[in-house]
Image (cartoon, rainbow, N blue to C red; front, side, top):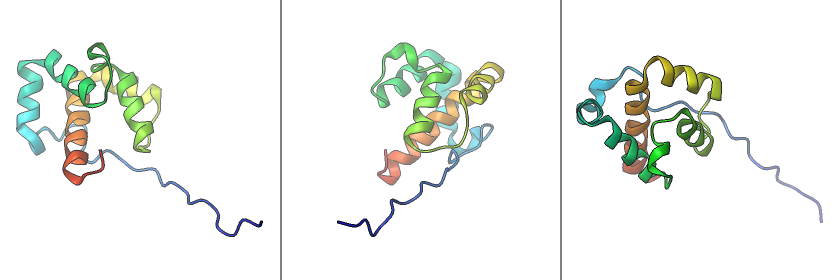
Length: 104
């Protein structure tokens, strides 16, 4: 039997909000500023991971892989090293938006 259709190509995407777009969702930003560790646990819980993983570049890498978002582990590490709160809030905003769209 001959193959007549080739599998589609996955086009890389981007996060739905920028790293510094905290005003897009002030509630998540305040949540992160008031209880940063709780925000990390919420992210880990959303992704079915251990609570300790929610604030690491690795969780960002897992998320990027799952949703074919451009980037690398090196970029993830630098983003988390330079701006941990912004990177964590960006990830939570993206998770929330994908939930609203029904694609999480």
